[in-house]
Length: 298
Image (tube, rainbow, N blue to C red; front, side, top):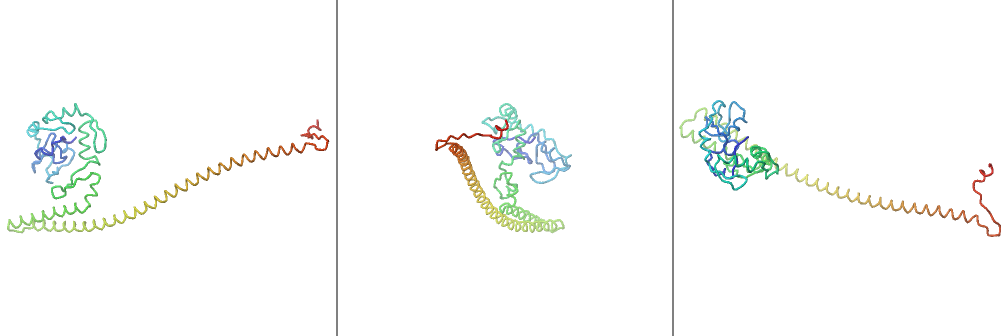
């Protein structure tokens, strides 16, 4: 089970949105270390002693998670527009509406049907491979929406790598500014700067490797297209040969039928010739007696 989906979820205050499933909070709990909230079911799904906030990456011990009933009660008065029709009302009445009028929703991206809204929301949140999703670095310049199944390819492309470089540069700049403001360069600051510089070098190395990989992919794609053309030509040749064989088989079948007819005509002609041999043309009658040996023995 995940949060609650609605047409207007993107215009609601961000505090009402789960930092994990990005849907409207369901039975919200609060992370004491950072103050962000998530659905109680999303908290249980992590099943860790340390719960990592998806929004800020700060970790909170699982025994310091706060059950936020007052906030959940406040949310019940939120104005909601149904995801599947034009119904509007409060969050308190929304789930009843969904159960009564939309008990078996169908995913418009993959046409799969579900037996409940909760299953459907879970499917949209993490399972459907055809649904468009935001890049993890949307807030850092990577605004492209990507079909979930294409995310691994997106993470390797130049736009995403550039966004990662921007994130690292911002972190490095903020860290330097904080060090200058404090007017001291302590060991922790040096260590953090060194780690960022190492990370930046690693990213540059990955970017170079990604460019090489992209060239290899282009080359392999070209070779694949060439092989596909050859395969298509071979397929066409095989089809032509198959057609020729079928035509020759039909021709041979016709010749066989003609040969059978000729053999029948030949047998008939032989019988006529044998009959003509028994005809007398000089006044002498000749009778042809078949099976003479058998007759004599009798």
